[in-house]
Image (cartoon, rainbow, N blue to C red):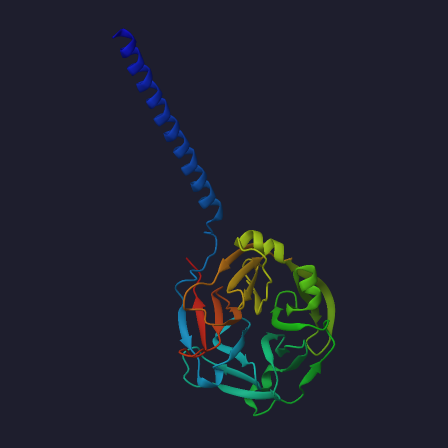
Length: 299
């Protein structure tokens, strides 16, 4: 009987030890999961990407492909669509838009305004430049075409930095970029007329995007970029990848954010206003018109 009690006591002790070990293991496992969640959760983006203010565009901007403000003034947005050489301008709530013709049929991808000049990017890297003052005309005069500025590739992103007077052209796709697993950005000093002098070349490595997004084998195909005037961070938009990439002033990637939900049909344009609110434009779809989404800066 004595040995039997000893056997029972030993079994109970072993059982308690096993329960304690399982409890300790689960506690450690939960802590690790919490730590991982804490490191991957992004709380520093000052915009709620899930709750925009939506502005539907008129029918002639169904295929809106680029947007810009003049000196950050959101009372009037300038936009292009990727089939005709027309610059549109309107208020966010306007039901109709006005436009000025600056070119013929073509694949126009993005627009920027700098030093009172409108700069429009074609997919082949060609630029069309004309005075902003000519928007009141039916057709812009003194339109200057700038060719052979960047290597042969497909381009969709154009941005102007009002503080530095620089223009940035963003590659969507090229054989060289795919080989090097990176996306190229070319910077130019703009004199306010038609002269653009090379001012640097930058890259966005696919590997950095993969690490931050958790996605494997990313071929980043960006469609637009804009510089946040308050933080000097670059916001790079990708319609193909449905992704927003944040980089510092020298294009070192800091964070990535997925563009989820039904708000992002085909995000093609991006801009900031002078109050640092963020705007993203979408081409229309089967059941949706072209639109501009406003993401207000969190207070």
